[in-house]
Length: 257
Image (cartoon, rainbow, N blue to C red; front, top):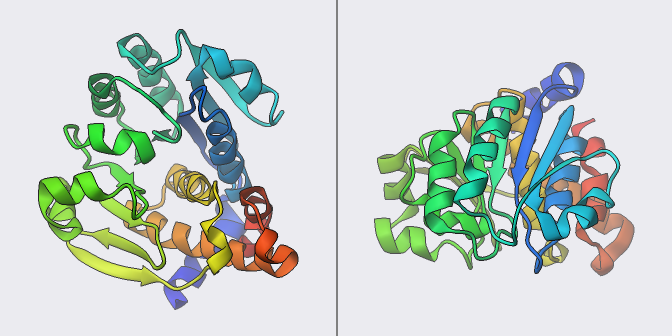
Protein backbone atom coordinates (compact mmCIF):
# COMPACT_ATOMS: atom_id res chain seq x y z
CA UNK A 1 0.00 0.00 0.00
CA UNK A 2 2.94 2.33 0.51
CA UNK A 3 3.60 2.63 -3.23
CA UNK A 4 -0.07 3.39 -3.92
CA UNK A 5 -0.10 6.08 -1.25
CA UNK A 6 2.93 7.74 -2.82
CA UNK A 7 1.31 7.59 -6.26
CA UNK A 8 -1.94 9.01 -4.86
CA UNK A 9 -0.02 11.85 -3.27
CA UNK A 10 1.61 12.68 -6.60
CA UNK A 11 -1.80 12.87 -8.29
CA UNK A 12 -3.32 15.12 -5.66
CA UNK A 13 -0.34 17.45 -5.55
CA UNK A 14 0.91 17.55 -9.12
CA UNK A 15 -1.30 15.98 -11.75
CA UNK A 16 -4.91 16.56 -10.81
CA UNK A 17 -5.48 19.08 -13.64
CA UNK A 18 -4.05 16.94 -16.47
CA UNK A 19 -5.52 14.97 -19.32
CA UNK A 20 -8.21 14.79 -21.98
CA UNK A 21 -10.51 11.77 -22.09
CA UNK A 22 -12.63 10.56 -25.01
CA UNK A 23 -15.57 8.27 -24.30
CA UNK A 24 -17.33 6.15 -26.95
CA UNK A 25 -20.37 4.86 -25.13
CA UNK A 26 -24.12 4.84 -24.68
CA UNK A 27 -27.24 3.72 -26.50
CA UNK A 28 -31.00 4.23 -26.36
CA UNK A 29 -31.14 1.46 -23.76
CA UNK A 30 -28.23 2.90 -21.74
CA UNK A 31 -28.18 6.70 -22.13
CA UNK A 32 -26.61 7.42 -18.73
CA UNK A 33 -23.36 5.46 -19.00
CA UNK A 34 -21.40 8.16 -20.90
CA UNK A 35 -22.15 10.75 -18.22
CA UNK A 36 -21.26 8.42 -15.34
CA UNK A 37 -17.92 7.56 -16.92
CA UNK A 38 -17.28 11.21 -17.74
CA UNK A 39 -18.11 12.49 -14.27
CA UNK A 40 -15.83 9.91 -12.70
CA UNK A 41 -12.98 10.97 -14.99
CA UNK A 42 -13.51 14.65 -14.16
CA UNK A 43 -13.60 13.96 -10.42
CA UNK A 44 -10.36 12.00 -10.76
CA UNK A 45 -8.70 15.08 -12.21
CA UNK A 46 -9.09 15.11 -15.99
CA UNK A 47 -9.25 18.56 -17.58
CA UNK A 48 -11.60 17.78 -20.46
CA UNK A 49 -13.95 14.88 -21.14
CA UNK A 50 -15.63 14.42 -24.54
CA UNK A 51 -18.36 11.83 -24.97
CA UNK A 52 -19.17 10.40 -28.42
CA UNK A 53 -22.72 9.05 -28.47
CA UNK A 54 -25.45 8.01 -30.93
CA UNK A 55 -27.61 10.87 -32.17
CA UNK A 56 -30.87 9.79 -30.44
CA UNK A 57 -29.34 10.25 -26.97
CA UNK A 58 -27.26 13.34 -27.72
CA UNK A 59 -29.62 15.74 -25.96
CA UNK A 60 -29.96 13.44 -22.95
CA UNK A 61 -26.20 13.20 -22.45
CA UNK A 62 -25.62 16.89 -23.21
CA UNK A 63 -28.22 17.85 -20.62
CA UNK A 64 -26.85 15.70 -17.82
CA UNK A 65 -23.71 17.63 -16.94
CA UNK A 66 -22.52 21.02 -18.21
CA UNK A 67 -18.93 19.99 -17.55
CA UNK A 68 -18.98 17.36 -20.31
CA UNK A 69 -18.21 17.96 -23.97
CA UNK A 70 -20.60 15.96 -26.15
CA UNK A 71 -20.21 14.81 -29.75
CA UNK A 72 -22.49 12.50 -31.74
CA UNK A 73 -22.65 10.10 -34.64
CA UNK A 74 -25.60 9.33 -36.93
CA UNK A 75 -27.91 6.42 -36.20
CA UNK A 76 -28.61 4.32 -33.13
CA UNK A 77 -25.61 1.94 -33.22
CA UNK A 78 -21.86 2.38 -33.46
CA UNK A 79 -20.93 1.46 -37.05
CA UNK A 80 -18.19 1.90 -39.63
CA UNK A 81 -19.27 5.48 -40.30
CA UNK A 82 -18.30 6.46 -36.73
CA UNK A 83 -14.78 5.01 -36.82
CA UNK A 84 -13.09 7.99 -38.47
CA UNK A 85 -14.50 10.43 -35.90
CA UNK A 86 -13.39 8.03 -33.15
CA UNK A 87 -9.87 8.20 -34.57
CA UNK A 88 -10.04 12.01 -34.51
CA UNK A 89 -11.20 11.98 -30.89
CA UNK A 90 -8.33 9.60 -30.13
CA UNK A 91 -5.93 12.17 -31.60
CA UNK A 92 -7.44 14.85 -29.37
CA UNK A 93 -7.48 12.71 -26.23
CA UNK A 94 -4.80 11.43 -23.88
CA UNK A 95 -6.85 8.29 -23.21
CA UNK A 96 -9.96 6.74 -24.74
CA UNK A 97 -12.85 4.68 -23.36
CA UNK A 98 -14.94 2.41 -25.55
CA UNK A 99 -17.82 0.15 -24.60
CA UNK A 100 -20.05 1.22 -21.67
CA UNK A 101 -23.66 0.83 -22.76
CA UNK A 102 -22.65 0.38 -26.42
CA UNK A 103 -25.58 -1.86 -27.35
CA UNK A 104 -25.67 -3.60 -30.77
CA UNK A 105 -22.42 -2.03 -31.96
CA UNK A 106 -20.93 -3.47 -35.14
CA UNK A 107 -18.15 -5.78 -33.87
CA UNK A 108 -15.91 -5.05 -36.85
CA UNK A 109 -16.30 -1.31 -36.34
CA UNK A 110 -15.41 -1.65 -32.65
CA UNK A 111 -12.33 -3.70 -33.52
CA UNK A 112 -11.27 -1.20 -36.19
CA UNK A 113 -11.78 1.74 -33.82
CA UNK A 114 -9.55 0.13 -31.21
CA UNK A 115 -6.86 -0.59 -33.78
CA UNK A 116 -6.94 2.93 -35.20
CA UNK A 117 -6.45 4.74 -31.86
CA UNK A 118 -2.90 5.13 -30.55
CA UNK A 119 -3.53 6.49 -27.03
CA UNK A 120 -4.04 4.20 -24.01
CA UNK A 121 -7.61 3.02 -23.73
CA UNK A 122 -10.11 1.35 -21.44
CA UNK A 123 -12.23 -1.34 -23.10
CA UNK A 124 -15.40 -2.16 -21.20
CA UNK A 125 -18.72 -3.99 -21.29
CA UNK A 126 -20.14 -4.51 -24.79
CA UNK A 127 -16.83 -3.75 -26.51
CA UNK A 128 -15.02 -6.53 -24.66
CA UNK A 129 -15.85 -9.46 -26.93
CA UNK A 130 -15.26 -7.56 -30.23
CA UNK A 131 -11.96 -6.28 -28.85
CA UNK A 132 -10.50 -9.78 -28.72
CA UNK A 133 -9.74 -9.47 -32.44
CA UNK A 134 -7.94 -6.14 -31.98
CA UNK A 135 -4.49 -5.07 -30.76
CA UNK A 136 -4.88 -4.75 -26.98
CA UNK A 137 -1.27 -4.03 -26.11
CA UNK A 138 -2.25 -0.48 -25.12
CA UNK A 139 -5.49 -1.36 -23.34
CA UNK A 140 -6.96 -1.96 -19.91
CA UNK A 141 -10.01 -4.23 -19.99
CA UNK A 142 -12.54 -3.81 -17.18
CA UNK A 143 -14.93 -6.78 -17.25
CA UNK A 144 -17.24 -7.77 -14.42
CA UNK A 145 -17.56 -11.40 -13.38
CA UNK A 146 -20.56 -11.62 -15.71
CA UNK A 147 -18.67 -10.22 -18.71
CA UNK A 148 -15.35 -12.04 -18.56
CA UNK A 149 -16.58 -15.30 -20.13
CA UNK A 150 -15.50 -14.64 -23.75
CA UNK A 151 -11.94 -13.86 -22.65
CA UNK A 152 -11.65 -17.07 -20.67
CA UNK A 153 -13.32 -19.08 -23.41
CA UNK A 154 -10.77 -17.92 -25.99
CA UNK A 155 -7.61 -17.86 -23.88
CA UNK A 156 -8.30 -20.30 -21.05
CA UNK A 157 -7.37 -17.87 -18.29
CA UNK A 158 -6.81 -14.19 -17.68
CA UNK A 159 -3.16 -14.93 -16.91
CA UNK A 160 -2.67 -16.41 -20.37
CA UNK A 161 -4.68 -13.63 -21.99
CA UNK A 162 -2.54 -10.86 -20.52
CA UNK A 163 0.66 -12.70 -21.36
CA UNK A 164 -0.30 -13.24 -25.00
CA UNK A 165 -1.91 -9.87 -25.75
CA UNK A 166 -0.09 -7.45 -23.45
CA UNK A 167 -3.45 -6.22 -22.14
CA UNK A 168 -4.11 -5.41 -18.49
CA UNK A 169 -7.33 -6.70 -16.92
CA UNK A 170 -9.17 -5.13 -14.00
CA UNK A 171 -11.79 -7.73 -13.09
CA UNK A 172 -14.56 -6.45 -10.81
CA UNK A 173 -16.54 -8.76 -8.57
CA UNK A 174 -16.79 -9.80 -4.93
CA UNK A 175 -13.02 -9.29 -4.88
CA UNK A 176 -11.49 -7.07 -7.55
CA UNK A 177 -8.45 -8.55 -9.30
CA UNK A 178 -5.81 -6.87 -11.42
CA UNK A 179 -4.05 -9.14 -13.92
CA UNK A 180 -1.00 -8.03 -15.91
CA UNK A 181 1.81 -10.00 -17.54
CA UNK A 182 0.31 -13.19 -16.11
CA UNK A 183 0.50 -11.89 -12.53
CA UNK A 184 -2.46 -11.23 -10.23
CA UNK A 185 -3.15 -9.01 -7.27
CA UNK A 186 -6.33 -8.32 -5.32
CA UNK A 187 -7.86 -5.03 -4.29
CA UNK A 188 -9.11 -4.96 -0.72
CA UNK A 189 -11.13 -1.72 -0.64
CA UNK A 190 -14.88 -1.47 -1.17
CA UNK A 191 -18.17 -2.49 0.45
CA UNK A 192 -20.99 -4.91 -0.31
CA UNK A 193 -23.21 -1.94 -1.21
CA UNK A 194 -21.11 -1.31 -4.33
CA UNK A 195 -22.98 -3.92 -6.35
CA UNK A 196 -25.28 -1.02 -7.26
CA UNK A 197 -25.52 -0.19 -10.97
CA UNK A 198 -23.03 2.34 -12.29
CA UNK A 199 -20.03 1.53 -10.14
CA UNK A 200 -18.44 -0.33 -13.05
CA UNK A 201 -18.80 2.81 -15.16
CA UNK A 202 -17.25 4.77 -12.31
CA UNK A 203 -14.27 2.42 -12.32
CA UNK A 204 -13.85 2.94 -16.06
CA UNK A 205 -13.80 6.72 -15.68
CA UNK A 206 -11.27 6.62 -12.87
CA UNK A 207 -8.88 4.32 -14.74
CA UNK A 208 -9.21 6.36 -17.94
CA UNK A 209 -8.40 9.55 -16.06
CA UNK A 210 -5.28 8.00 -14.55
CA UNK A 211 -4.18 6.80 -17.99
CA UNK A 212 -4.76 10.31 -19.30
CA UNK A 213 -2.43 11.55 -16.57
CA UNK A 214 0.27 9.35 -18.11
CA UNK A 215 0.12 6.60 -15.52
CA UNK A 216 1.30 3.12 -16.45
CA UNK A 217 -1.61 0.82 -17.34
CA UNK A 218 -0.97 -1.70 -14.60
CA UNK A 219 -0.64 0.99 -11.96
CA UNK A 220 -3.70 2.83 -13.28
CA UNK A 221 -5.77 -0.35 -12.97
CA UNK A 222 -4.46 -1.09 -9.49
CA UNK A 223 -4.87 2.44 -8.19
CA UNK A 224 -8.21 2.85 -9.99
CA UNK A 225 -9.67 -0.14 -8.18
CA UNK A 226 -8.34 1.17 -4.88
CA UNK A 227 -9.78 4.68 -5.43
CA UNK A 228 -13.17 3.23 -6.43
CA UNK A 229 -13.31 0.99 -3.38
CA UNK A 230 -12.20 3.67 -0.93
CA UNK A 231 -14.64 6.20 -2.44
CA UNK A 232 -17.35 3.56 -2.05
CA UNK A 233 -16.45 3.13 1.60
CA UNK A 234 -16.78 6.87 2.19
CA UNK A 235 -20.08 7.05 0.31
CA UNK A 236 -21.48 4.02 2.12
CA UNK A 237 -20.60 5.61 5.45
CA UNK A 238 -22.79 8.56 4.41
CA UNK A 239 -25.67 6.74 2.73
CA UNK A 240 -25.63 3.16 3.98
CA UNK A 241 -27.23 0.53 1.72
CA UNK A 242 -28.90 3.32 -0.29
CA UNK A 243 -25.61 4.42 -1.84
CA UNK A 244 -25.71 5.00 -5.62
CA UNK A 245 -22.96 5.43 -8.18
CA UNK A 246 -23.12 9.23 -8.21
CA UNK A 247 -22.55 9.21 -4.42
CA UNK A 248 -19.36 7.24 -5.02
CA UNK A 249 -18.23 9.61 -7.77
CA UNK A 250 -18.65 12.63 -5.52
CA UNK A 251 -16.31 11.11 -2.93
CA UNK A 252 -13.44 10.51 -5.39
CA UNK A 253 -11.77 13.88 -4.63
CA UNK A 254 -11.90 13.13 -0.90
CA UNK A 255 -10.18 9.81 -1.52
CA UNK A 256 -7.46 11.44 -3.59
CA UNK A 257 -6.94 14.17 -1.00
